[in-house]
Image (cartoon, rainbow, N blue to C red; front, top):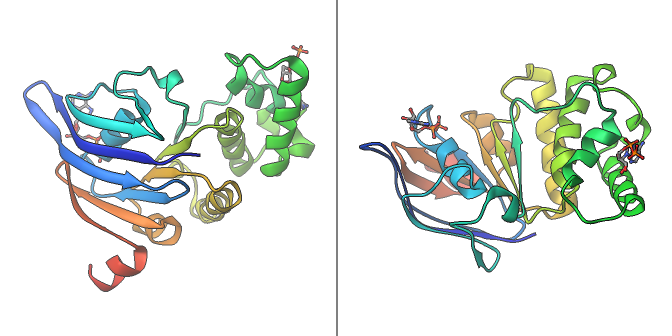
Length: 225
Ligand code: ADP
Ligand code: ADP
């Protein structure tokens, strides 16, 4: 895993500036949650870190590399979306292995990697199944597995739980938190849900209108809202 350093990050869409010079350092192994109302620039910021949006100013470092101009696949970062794209015609194992399709590992090593990820996520007994035979939470784990299998430097989550019902959301909050602890993963997580931020974050970044309004631990922000 690796840390992420963002300096004076700027984004414009046409004449409209939507991210106004953000500075933030995410430590190696830290779980940082961006919160703020819809349209404040959370997702755009995350997508710039992932390389899915070009930046209009500033710098993004992942580990010791400046990644400003690198393609998403060269940033060694895993992005987990809310509409997790699981392929229904592939088994769970194949879905996870799909994360390795550009990898140079041989077949035996790929299989071992898929099995390892399956064990970590509690999917080891389900690798031969079709996604249609899984629960929503298990499917979400498959999506995370596909990201994990590449040994990313960091995970980026964009509202990963917003399509789930309340009970499953609560369960997945715990699961993602456990994953963070078990892997020592660096995570940047975007949500508009205060509960997710308060229960999962090491540090919360509050955004408004393309700027960082406040940064602190859940306890700091609870005491100084
Ligand atoms: P959030 O994730 O906090 O809801 P976004 O990062 O999605 O906010 O959006 C920030 C602002 O940028 C919003 O005003 C949104 O309308 C605008 N925006 C996002 N994507 C585009 C785009 N592709 N073209 C033009 N404007 C966009
Ligand atoms: P093949 O290329 O041998 O036809 P499959 O289509 O069965 O392989 O699966 C593609 C890849 O998915 C395999 O190379 C393996 O890495 C992974 N995979 C699929 N199913 C499993 C499983 N049950 N356990 C572990 N890895 C699996």
